[in-house]
Image (tube, rainbow, N blue to C red; front, side, top):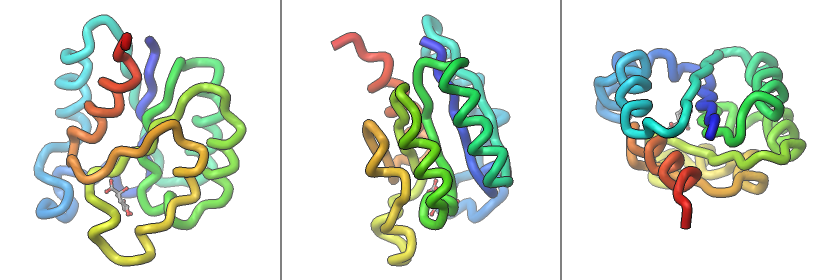
Length: 140
Ligand code: DQA
């Protein structure tokens, strides 16, 4: 499978940003580790802090990928446009969050994406991504 991870705003700073919530390992370090766990599949990575760029990448991924693992960061809770983009896709989208958004401020409890996601994983740190890919690539 060709799987793309799409990360939204501020996730480029994981590793430095609020380490008590997001840990001390960044995606530069983690993506090769993740790829090594799934040698039969190809994992690509895209991150942007810009809402429209995330939407453009979601559109492009419908032709380039078999599935999307999406952490839209704070746009999860604010962006009707990203929700609409996900709704328009035929390929599966797994919504992920590193933190348990339901244990945080109430504004983080609502997602514009969940309704259109095949599954939602949250609260497992970087392992949320691994769990999403494990689900997508499972043959059962
Ligand atoms: C996040 C949770 C969001 O509420 C937050 O705005 C983020 C990261 C997570 O991975 O836990 O930027 O999506």
